[in-house]
Image (cartoon, one colour):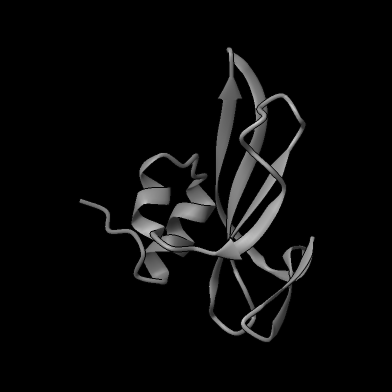
Length: 92
């Protein structure tokens, strides 16, 4: 998905994928939101929906609260290592 935000043009397909969060509506998966890192270092959230939830919509936006996103995210071992490297996650 492409979007212009504050005069910058972003393409979700050329961003680094850091973590994802799945959305459910009545027990069915209704889409997912992916935490992305753009080439300029900006963190974005890309929501891709399948239409099952009337309140979700396809969207690409600046991430307002990365830590809140990560609290509910599915994170692979590779993504975890990258999040630690970026200083967004601390292993305790």
